[in-house]
Amino acid sequence: MDDELDDRLAAVRARVARACSDAGRDPGAVRVLLATKTQDASTIRAALEADARACAADPTLRPVLVGENRVQELVAKAPLLADVTGGIHLIGQLQANKVNAALRWSSCIESVDSIALARRLAERTEGLDVLVQVNVSGEPTKSGTSPEGALPLLEEVAGLGTLCVRGLMTIGLRSDESAAVRAGFDTLRRLRDAGAARGLCGPELSMGMSGDLDLAVAAGATVVRVGTAVFGARRV
Image 1 (cartoon, rainbow, N blue to C red):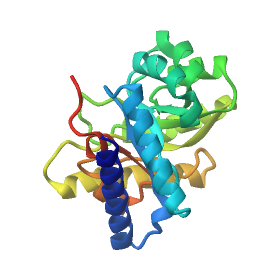
Image 2: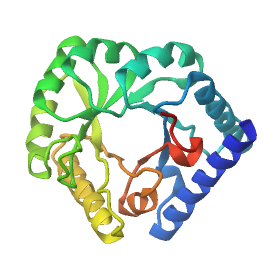
Image 3: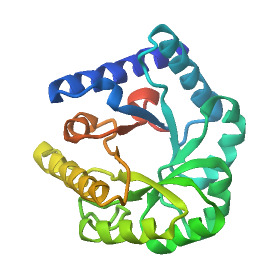
Image 4: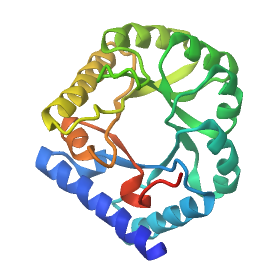
């Protein structure tokens, strides 16, 4: 399994590097986040150890990040990984009644999609890194504020004064039409640019997963969230 993780991580990094080269971007500008939904702590640890070996062999590489979709998985696994992760991002929807649990173990909430959630976070912590999630595809199954609501939400979240809004996040359109998927990523980049120009957010663009990360990198992603490309098919 360790050899497989080494190989898969190397393949993902090579894929990101090719996408950056094709887009005229520095590969160092894009970080890989391991989406660890359904993976157990030992598998995640093995992936992080494989990444550490790669970074030791090539000091130009940036260590991977780790992201959990579900608060219950975050709470179960984070204590077992505290010595190797440096913090875990929450990349899935956060319900109000799970805020306290998420804050205990998460270093960044990538799924802030309403001012109500932002206020709840701001009341309980200070200096937390967050990303505002935008539903660029308009699909009802996806969370996030609408593109039209993104800048107003950024203004409200920035106005709270206690959260560090690092940028924006989205889940790309589920489609075989690459032009349509790319259009959504371009929308997020434009919204990030507009927000950053007004001092409302930082430069981060968390977008792109195993199936569409190349398009996301071409559109300006700074973080790509990769699960199956590293771990294989998800466990049920």
